[in-house]
Image 1 (cartoon, helix red, strand yellow):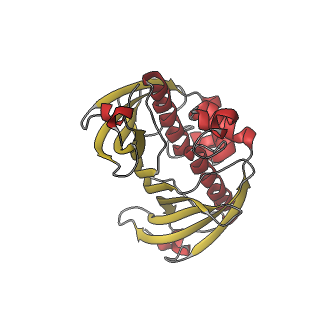
Image 2 (tube, each protein chain N blue to C red):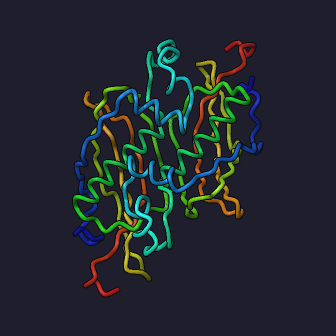
Length: 150
Length: 150
């Protein structure tokens, strides 16, 4: 199991990959972001990006998926997140893209009152062409080792 | 139609409402955030929140939905977003919640080179008990009026 004590500032963890196809892009966007550039291939072909692109929120959701998959694999003792400090959608995500996550620990700080600690992380997704499509600076809460005695 | 010129700093726009049930919470989370607190009602009942709660990313996606619905109604000439400056998940979102959006214009700035402008907005979702569950400071790009001649 991975506790707060097992994260090191500067550590970069390679996360799993996830692929995204047109059906998934359209399905997500119909529910949550039904703009033509995300749901209408013909209209999107005429637009700025020359084709359908994923909603930025879909890209964020995919970044959570690869993080959650790694948390499960590594048995990370996560306790949720209060939020994020920054999100940047840097390049379009298109049907057929394969996105690989990386997770860098920027800062960590133990709680003074509870058996947990806070981490600040840079979570990025990079596509199969090596382009970073998403960069998000987020906050996480991780349980401390029981033997920390706090 | 609503162009960049039609947004005023300090303006607060009431967005549509959206409801969320257990099936939608579980469906989103199975795909994007499969942690027990979002997908397993029995495990979640034993956890910190005493029941199933929506993934924070699901809440973000719902905030996009109410914004996109209003953009369509008001014919906002949106051109996408480079990202967000902050996201805070302030209270849990539970099955049966009804979330209403508000959208406050914090700053605006016209592009010097292109017929568009940038806005900074505070997008919040408030539940049926009056609790703000999500606060996000985001950036938007809006087309300028054609007669602006830029």
